[in-house]
Length: 139
Image (cartoon, rainbow, N blue to C red; front, top):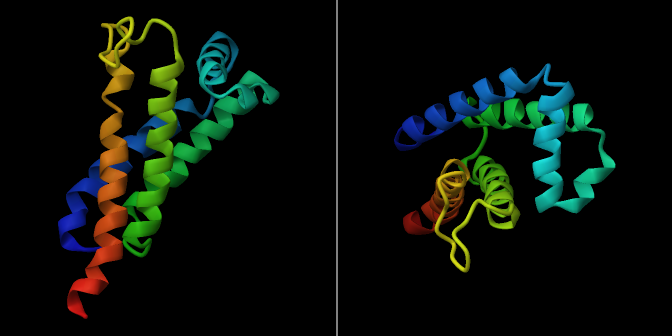
């Protein structure tokens, strides 16, 4: 891991680890609510029962958090994971009714929490692009 990546990777990684660990035992109405929002954005997720979906999400967040913090995981690889996860959250924001102002991408008050997740896509793409272009500059 490059020293310059350390603040980005550790801060986002710790956030994901914490989020995933908090979701490990999610069930009942909380799991159903989270699952319902996800199905709105990605209908294929309807094939999972809510508690199973919550567990898969929790484990995904823990794995991504650990990969971000682990110094041996290459920046482009962890960046791809972060970009994909962030893109899923952006899709959730764009497809969930009531999160955006009518006819706009601007968030409503309810959508501000998800709209900010676009930074995950930016951080992920930064890791991917910097990792892929780093070797070319030396050549």
